[in-house]
Length: 224
Image 1 (cartoon, rainbow, N blue to C red):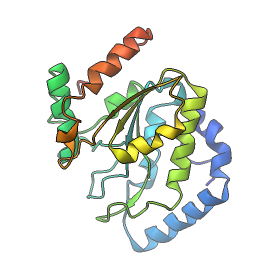
Image 2: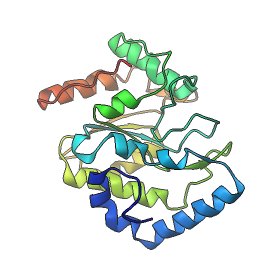
Image 3: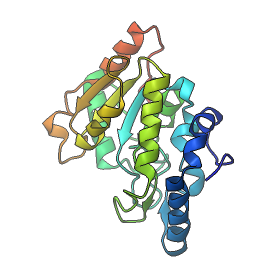
């Protein structure tokens, strides 16, 4: 991986050295070999979609996911999101249920969260690729080191970012965030297994907008 990687300029400049490290070179070799024998999601041009749609200067909110959807045509480089025309998966449906309860907005027909990304919501999976039909298959291959660097860079370079940490996996990343400079909202994960343990009723979407309003920043239009 090198400076010619397809990633938005502000991110490329700040992460350039990361791409040159041995673990990223090993990750690249792993992905090249993996692609010879398996289908990988998302497609190569969309792996860094979250960064390309949300430059560092634009980041207001970070929503952390674990790894991409592993079903056909689902993953497109944004956590929890699916391309337009693809049925929203259960976790995203539960996110929409909470938005409806919180703000009275209904989004159920469209699972594409690109409009959120364009407004400054970094939809970041901790692992950026996955083998088709094999959840978690690209964990512990190097992506976590890379996205940890992304999170710590946001913490260091910016101020007042709102981190939505849903579930224990995301909450384990709190240690990378300066809680004196940034805002952290935590709940259970929106998956059907855990949404009733605190995600439903968390009101993170209205809370985030109130924080942005107090900062003098434009609120996120959660309607898709």
